Length: 299
Length: 80
Image 1 (cartoon, each protein chain N blue to C red):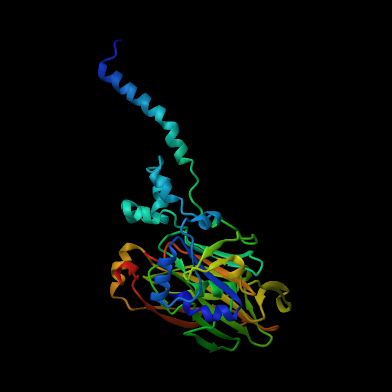
Image 2 (spheres, rainbow over the protein chains, first blue to last red; image 1 turned 90 degrees about the vertical axis):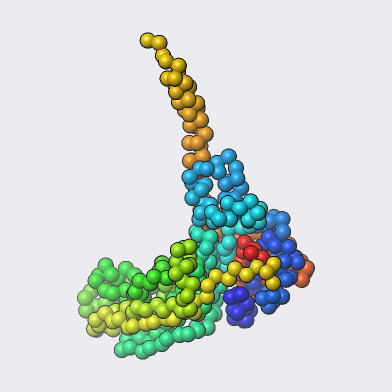
C-alpha cells in the first residue's frame, strides 16, 4: 500500500494518518497483516461515521429505489458505482454502506485544509500527490534537475509506480537565479510565456489542471509595466491521471512502463533584460502495474 | 363522429402516460451527485469519531491527530 511507504515522512512531518472503511476488525486485521500495514485501519462496520461525515455513497440505494431507471441516476451509477457492480445482487449488497472514496487533510484543530474526492470511481489520488499539494515534506524521488542561465529546477513525479486510474502529479521546484523573475499566470496577457510543463499527449495519461502558487506583482521599469512573477523558490504542480477506461485496460495489459515526455517552458527577465522563452526537455518514466484484483479470500 | 374502440384505447393510454409524467419529471429534477459538495468543506471541522482499529483499540480524532494535523482516508473496502 502506497500510504505505508510514505508513513515515515508523514510522521516526521507531524501528520497523523488513519484509513476508514466499513470492513470488520477481522477483515482489517487480516489485511494489515497481509500488506504489512502499521498505521490505524478503522472499522466503521455500520457505516455510522461514514454517514456522519456526509460521504455515504447514496447512489446504490437510489439505483434500487423508484428512480432507478432515471437517466441521471443511471449516469451516476456509471460514475460512482460501476455498472458491473450494480448488475450483480451480491456486489450490490457489498457496496451498500461504502463511502465515496476520498481524503481529508486536517490541521491540528481538526479543520479541513484540503480534500480530495474523485468524480469517477476508478480514479484515485495518491497519498504522495496529496502530500505534495498540501506542502507536506515529500522527498523527491526519480528527480531530474537542471540549471539554466536563469534558474535551477528539480522536476519529479509524485509517484514512480502507477496503475489504471492513478491520479498523480508532476512537480517542478524552481529556484530563480539572482535578480531573476519568472513569469507567473496572468503574464501571458502581456505576451510573456508563463512557466509550466508542456507535455506531449499520451495514449495512457490525461493531463489535468496545473496548480500555481501565489505570485507577486513586479514592476518592470524598462517597459513601465506591472506583471505577475515569481522571484523566490516555488513549486508548480501538474496533475495527471492514468486512463482507467475498460478499453485501455486491455491495451495496457502488456505495458510495464509509461514514459511522459515534454518540456518545461518558462520566460525570465532580470531588472534590465527580458530573455527569450526557454523550453527545457523533460522526461519521466513511471513503472506501470496492472490493477491488483487480489482479494483476501483468494489467499 | 363515433370514436372507434381502438382509438379510445389509445386515448386512455396517452392519458395514463400524461398522468405518469409528473413522477418522471420529479426524478429528472434530481440534482446530480457532486462529491465535492459532500461533507466538511475546507475551513470546516470534521466530526469526531470513535472506531476500533485493526488491533481492536478504540481510536478517536484526537488519538489519530499528529502535532501538525492528520490525513483521513475513506476507502470503499480493504477486502475487495
